[in-house]
Length: 233
Ligand code: SF4
Image 1 (spheres, rainbow, N blue to C red):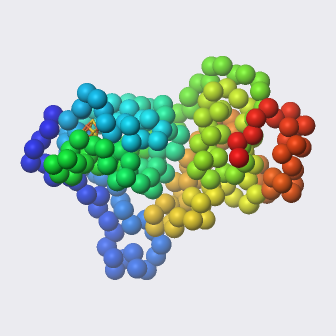
Image 2: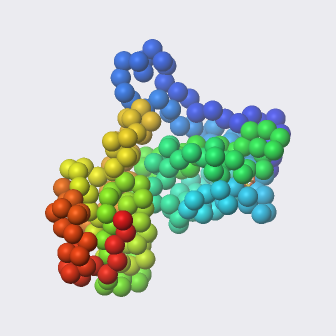
C-alpha cells in the first residue's frame, strides 16, 4: 500500500492577492486525486496507533481504506460512527498534536494527512449526498439537557440523541455554535459548514433553544423540576 515516493499532499490554498480582499475560506481541501494519493500513503498499521490520538476514537485506517477504494460514502459512514461534526473537525481539529502525531509515518517522515482526508470525505458527502440521518433504535423517553452549543455541547447532544435520549440544547446567544461561530474566523471555518453540521445535529432530534441563559432564564433546579434527568454543563 505504501508508495514510498509519494510526498504528503498539500491542500491548495487561495491566492493571497485574492484572499486579502475577502474573508472566504483559505484552504480548498484535497482534490479527488490528492485524496487518493494521500490515502495510499497509509500503511494500514495493525495496531492503529493514530486511533489512540483521536479524542473520539475514529477507526482511521478503516475510513482511509475506503478512500483508497474510491468508496467515499463508506469513508464518511465510518467517520460518522464516532464523529458527528467531521467537516468542522477536518478543518479545525489540531490533528498535528493528536492522531497525526502518533502516525507511524511520522517516525521517518511526514504523517498521513488524516485531517485533510476527514475533511475530504465530509465535504464529499455535503456535495454529493443528502446528509444521512442514522436510525435511532432505542428511544428511551428520558429528557436530558446540554448547556452551551459550542463543540462540546453539540457533540454531547448529538451523541446522547443517537443513544435514544430526548435532548434539549440550551444556548444563551441568538445563534448556536459558541466558539465555532464566534471564535474561529470565516476563512478557517465557514459559517455555512457550521450551519450544515448543526442542522445534522438538529435532525438527530436535538431541540436547540436559543436565547436561554441557564442560571438566569432558568436555573439548574428549574431544569430538574421540569423533568430533565441529567444535565451536561
Ligand atoms: S498510524 Fe498512520 S500509517 Fe498507520 S494506520 Fe494510522 S494513519 Fe495509517
